[in-house]
Amino acid sequence: MSPSILRTVAELRERVRTWRCAGERVAVVPTMGALHEGHLSLVEAAKARAERVIVTLFVNPRQFNNASDLAAYPRTEADDAAKLAPLAVDVLFAPAVEEMYGSGFSTTVSVTGVSDGLCGAHRPGHFDGVATVVSKLLLQSEADIACFGEKDFQQLLVVRRLAADLNIPVEIVGCPTVREADNLALSSRNMRLTTAQRRIAPAIADVLLKSAAHLATGGDAASVLEAARNALQKAGFDRVEYFELRDAETLEPLQHADRPARLLAAAWLGETRLIDNVPVVPPNL
Ligand SMILES: Nc1ncnc2c1ncn2[C@@H]1O[C@H](COP(=O)(O)OP(=O)(O)OP(=O)(O)O)[C@@H](O)[C@H]1O
Ligand SMILES: CC(C)(CO)[C@@H](O)C(=O)[O-]
Ligand code: BAL
Image (cartoon, rainbow, N blue to C red; front, side):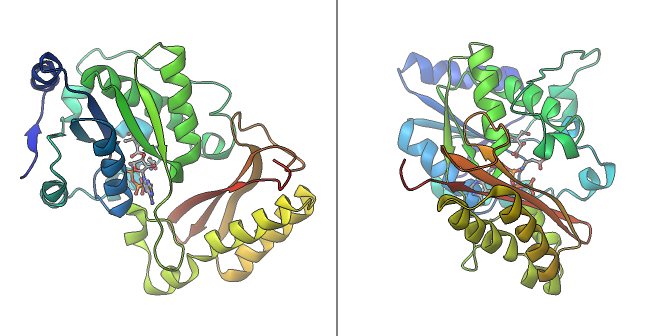
């Protein structure tokens, strides 16, 4: 059955109240639409944990640091609703920009620490936009559970931090990255790749995985990371924005993978920016 499409916070709250009265748990899956199997895996994770599932669809202007990226972002609401129908999602919450940011809107949620560096350094204002909209979506939906993908690993940690710091009573669930057969992480921005760029794109996952294996067996981060950046350029990426080893919980930069770590990368193919990350698990841990 197709989900009910709700446009206002008042309608959403009313629906959630009826579920709560029946003692049902509620899970929310925030998205910007153009749904793919990665998003659907979050919906499955939500369904496994709650009786009721809300998917949100909101292309949040405040998290785009680049006007042409916002303009080019795909908007496919009818297709998205059709993809959710077989999964028995209860509600697709798709508010207009004016519903989310009414006149006089003046509040920003800003998370320090985990949002420094990586995407935070290269997309100024991005994580303030994400933190603000996610705080709103969590408070609007009053969800018990919220599912986010590890593909956006830094975002996942920003969301965990804000939920803890603001005492929002929600469990944040991180879900593994869903990949194509050739290892490319699914992303709505992949549809912007040309055929030639699509052939190059899986190199980001391949180089991350090979580098993670070197680091896990004691490789020195500086030389592994430099070799990785060179390998991506050689594979055909136009620009490597970052390729870094970080602590898996705090995202502090690391010189050695002497604790659970994450290897994270962002690289450009023409006008398209791809991100990906993999765990680095030292063998003695
Ligand atoms: N391949 C994937 N596997 C698992 N989760 C994913 C994947 N891609 C996106 N997600 C998650 O889906 C949620 C919504 O993400 P979003 O709508 O931005 O999709 P996207 O495909 O990442 O698009 P974008 O092109 O903006 O990166 C986020 O929690 C994100 O981490
Ligand atoms: C979490 C999110 C839906 C907030 O706009 C977005 O950043 C995304 O799609 O990952
Ligand atoms: N997938 C994270 C949202 C963004 O790129 O803006």
